[in-house]
Amino acid sequence: MQENNIEKEELKKEMDNSEQEITEETVEQEETTDETNCDDNITDINEKLEEKKLQDEIDKVNEQYQRLQAEYANYRRRTQQEKETIGLFANEKILNDLIPVIDSMERALEACEDKEDSMYKGIDLVYKQLQDTLNKFGVEEIEALDQEFDPNLHLAVMQEVIDGVEANKVVMVLQKGYKLGSKVLRASMVKVSC
Image 1: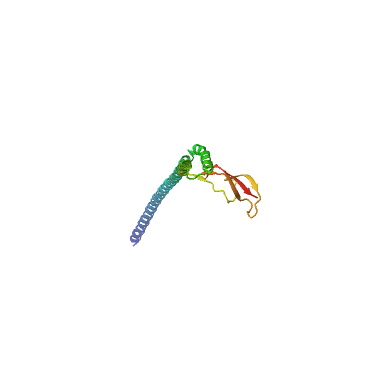
Image 2: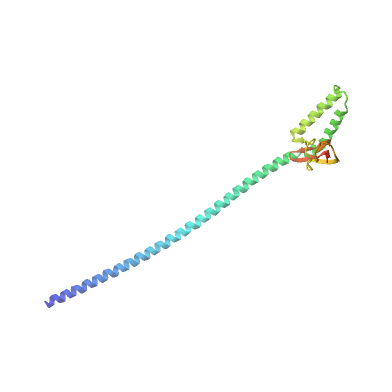
């Protein structure tokens, strides 16, 4: 019986040793698994950091691209406006030189007493052609008579108190004014009520 007891004790010891070995192996496996998981986590974090850096770089490049597109669109708009302005004002000097010719023709038409005379008809025809040509290039007469005085469009050379007319109104046009688009070529010379 004693032998049985000894055998049982030895068996028990062996079982304890086996359990201990199994536990140690399990711990080692868990540690290895933990190390592997830790390495995987580090790799995942590094990959996510790389992805984040790449995404940030892509976002930065996209923003630069959008800014460049906006700058180019603004450039195209500005150059188009400049072309239109240059085209409009390229002939400004010539148009300014033609305005006194119109004044002379108007005086010639006013001086003619016989409206049926061929001289009057010829001057009137040339006058209308000249006006049409100027209109084609965008030259417009500045409306002044009975308008509110505007120092940007009118040049006041006289003032007069007139009954029944409110102050600061143009009552007489002494010389017509002309503008090219929004630019004044020659201001209207006027008489203003005060």
